[in-house]
Length: 181
Image 1 (spheres, rainbow, N blue to C red):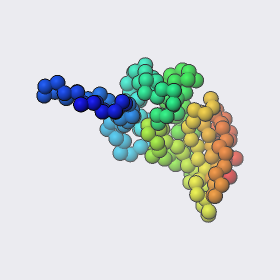
Image 2: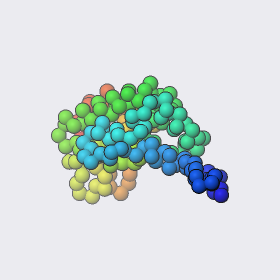
Image 3: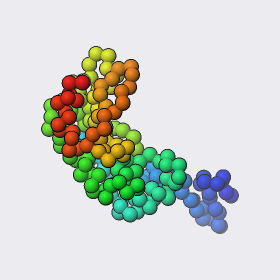
Image 4: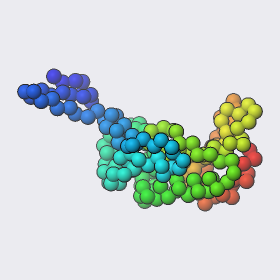
């Protein structure tokens, strides 16, 4: 018995059943944390899935195989940048995440938020900016949209502002301005 193209196909040979993976399910398993992080206080504590621990070559091969031309798989910022050749290695990306965390966790008011999309590194919120009619406090998020790797999103109410692109080297000097938004 065969399922539609791209789905799970069960082939019966005697009493044996062979299953072929569904690409999205395969990727979901590759990005799922094992074991799940119960208390994620840093980006490093979220690096528990196969994409974080398998060989970089295997991770890129699977990503490229499953992602295809449509580029629709949920993936961390660093994997998309690594796939394009914008980052030299996954280790470089982890160093960037850790540097941002070190800068922000050393300052009063910044909180690491670990719950985001599949396999993402989390983001940081400036808690004092969460007041009045603010729907979202000032936020620092990692991105593959530019080679600074960081976007700072000012606190906002009804109208979502455009993010301010920056880099880890510029972040520290930008923080006094960001913290008064």
